[in-house]
Length: 169
Image (cartoon, rainbow, N blue to C red; front, side, top):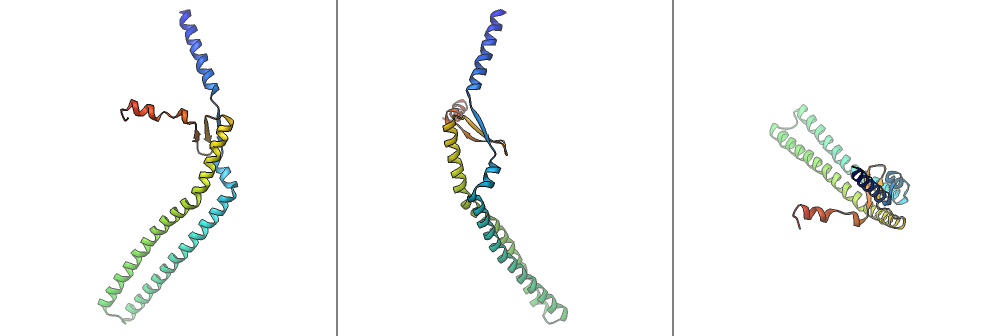
């Protein structure tokens, strides 16, 4: 019984010593990103790009509304035949669908532009994180604003062990 207790205590002390040898850090990336001048410039560029795309979309909607109002006016006055009215209504519906497609295209273009603008910034921050972690002996660095691991030392990667255990190698 005494040997079991000593063995358990020894194991507990070994685990505690090993765990305390690990060095962890954290970073508030949300705060950090608000202070980078590159982020402010990227935000400004993205906003300008969005404004440009939005103006085009708004103009298309205004043109569609004007055409619809003109068609309704002609129909109310009886200045257009039923067949011509139906044809023009179909054209307006096609234009409305085109505007909806444009809206989706805008979201896609904005996402692409965001990626283009922010990727170099994220790469710069990630590289700085690796250097800081290495210089200070951190095994892990967590993001306090998102509870995500920002950096983990390669020696702690267990992917290959999991692949072996799952028979994937």
